Image (tube, rainbow, N blue to C red; front, side):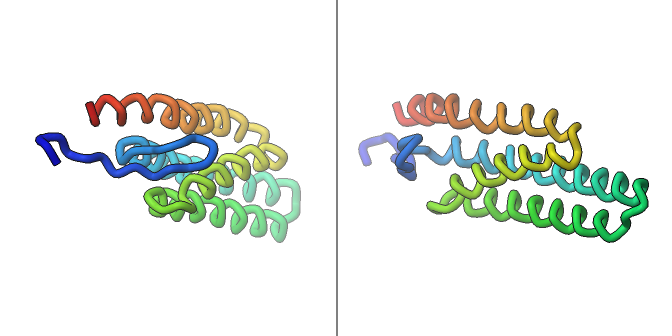
Length: 131
């Protein structure tokens, strides 16, 4: 290396090469999303119990916990090849949770927006760090 530190890049078929900074930003988004989805699962459980169906409430709670754990796992695997697709799966499942708790649309809008913003701007920042 000639004075410049080489940036580790992971290449993905659709998005292209992603550097360390982009992957870190995406991991932070997924960590925040995991917390929001967990609280959304609590709301889904409470709504089901209020409607008189505690069994369904428990099911929604465990499904929400599973999505939250998937988000944490995807954040941890972001440097590997499965991290980005798992992150997209978390985005999709967050949008699917709108069918149970309509207020999760706000969570979907915020975190999917952050996800796409990090993908776009992270690439620009990574290229500036290289040059």
